[in-house]
Length: 337
Image (cartoon, rainbow, N blue to C red; front, side, top):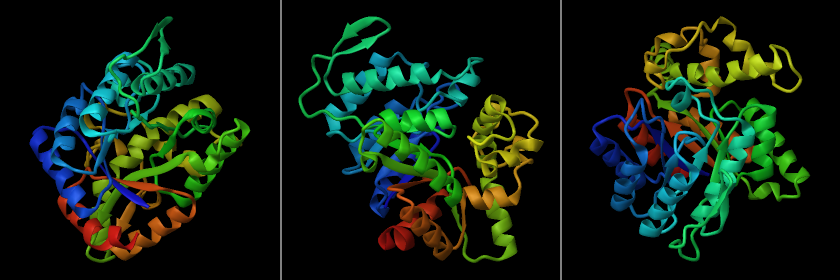
């Protein structure tokens, strides 16, 4: 199992770059960032510096979207980084939540996302693609260029699209029951489409907060540092409930039940510890969706996720223990996995 690190591109960029270098030295394989250009700094500029100062780390957004950049620009950016640093990027992509909503727009449709994924991959790998009715190709892309496209998904239609088209599946929660449910849906869609389900990389992403022990005080502090994640996931869950209803055979209640007390969401606090719009998230959800506690407890959860077919766990590190979490994973988690 690979271990990745997810950070926000808050200034100063130098600090983020240093933390990614630290993470590679600790054994992390991937360096991910959010991609919401209104809320944070531009990630692709920062990726160039991360790639220049690391040797093996793969970088990418978790996740970009089909709307804030034209597809040929996205493809060209990835292809340029790959040409400079040797195919060390991955395109995480979804419909768009914070990047779209903070600008007063709605997330893209799945049909639009599907078209974008195809065009971005084809162009970045040197082939011809159609973008808004115009055929184009990046003539400078050299043979051997490769850009994996991993799609973030929760709902049944999105999971189906992931299995039919994407190179990888990004699931932003670490609950084993829901992971098993959604991975099965992705793989079933792949089989139905005539694809090899084992060819799809499965990436689970969630906060991890390593505590010295499992005392009530330590766990309570860790939960408060990670409760924001339940609110972030709740945005996507609210979309599912509005589309499929509160009780649907297509969406497990283990995912939807907890948002009943949700009152709204202010994106100015998005992805940050202490987010006031996440008081509706109970401790049970934090414990299910995140990895909280000593390293032994986290290793056990990771082993369970690996048994379900997860290839990478990406650590969301938006809390007050970023560097100690990197170091703890490097010393006590990654060597065991």
